[in-house]
Image 1 (cartoon, protein in one colour):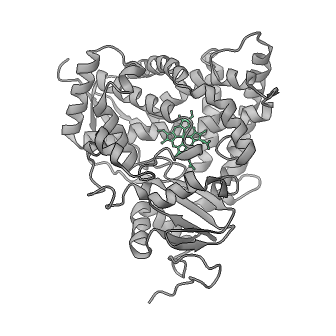
Image 2 (cartoon, protein in one colour):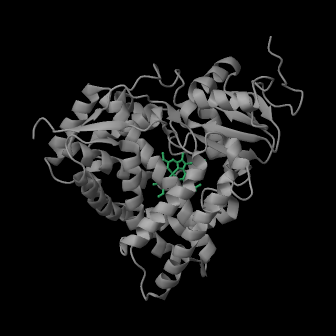
Length: 455
Ligand code: HEM
């Protein structure tokens, strides 16, 4: 019989908090089968349950009601900065993701123009140029790892659009290399490796890469601030943006850039990797998407107008991909006040998280939730979803600022690849999910490129 600590330590909701379900054992279960383990707890305890994981109690709040509370109606009562992902601060600093209240609101206002639809459209051209160039470097017959390849393409796009560092090339490559190596810190097998400190630790290595990146950014800021007019990149906007007569400090610029790179690049790469994992296993969907691409574009390059509104099936495929594999799958916060959700009272100073991944697998919202069915996201069905039921980009005032950017980039890369080649999964590979820092294919996605039938 299971002994529950409910009501014993902190009066938290029930959950598998008792021996042997915590610490190493819990970490291993979550590593081996993250979604299955969490959904079993949901089945056993309901939408609000407590996990004791690596010495930390965390209350999972699952489903639309909880999502609406954390993300929309009461979002000010939940702190990002004090939540579990404060672990990211040594790398990305205090950018939009990791700040709260007035500091966050000011930064969001200053950054908003970089994500206005007109700007996103102008980024589209550069995204397409990079995607086409990268696709042309591949050849029919190649066997390659799609997730790693897309990460590289996404970093090149970030070099152009975020940093405006396409020239000199060496500087952009140096930056990309150290960013990837620094970010590697968060690819740890277990979270406990992240908590180790001191010389030789993973964190010390990460900090070395961060110092190199900071040096490049400092030089770039000095140079750009000496230009009479700002350039086109988001870094230029950060160097010249003003709110109430105030500019960002160099430290703030560094933090915002790191945050945008961190939040934007693996999420997009994972989306592309999962999209192909899914459509290659569903030939009908692959074919229907290919037909749409050929009919709408007829061989020309895609424009943002095509991709937002002009290709409804592509839109449905992307939405269904992000339902099944929302890369940023959980959103930890610290509750600042006592609150009640789904009939549970939760004390102040509790670590809580919402989870898009789990919400998206609830059969009462998405019947047959494991199945890949893009039709779920016909315009009509999408409109009928209750608020908080579909949250791959979060929701409310802290919705992903890069939502359209990320969607556009993922769509461009997918469409350009399909225009050039027929993609096939290399047989016999495994498709487990890695969950930290994003849900991405744990073993990569090995793709064989074939000649397209019509070519
Ligand atoms: C498919 C791609 C993407 C997905 C699935 C995604 C997902 C998310 C989610 C779920 C959140 C909210 C997290 C929370 O509530 O705790 C978020 C926030 C954020 N994302 Fe994205 N993202 C993507 C692409 C991007 C891109 C391309 C950028 C930047 C260029 C970006 C920048 C950000 C930032 C700065 C935030 C914090 C916003 C705030 O708190 O005000 N994301 N993203």
